[in-house]
Image: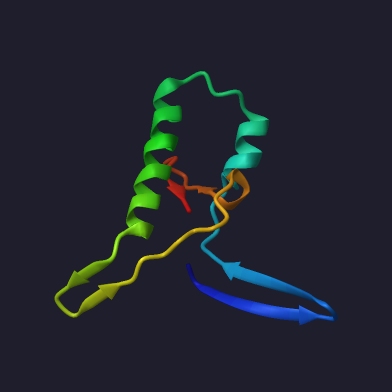
Length: 90
């Protein structure tokens, strides 16, 4: 996550999130382009998604650090980016 903004155009509102660039794109495009036969990559994707959701949904109290519970609300393959090492970003 780098930044976010809300832009109102007429009656519509566009919410924009700026993140790091990941050359593999989003999970939706990757799954439509490549047929995954490698179970290790598929399990890595599933583990990465579940681990990311677990982190978002946890409230963390640590020394001088507080992270509130975050609810994703729009989990879909178009909102999941693939890093170069095939870890996923929610």
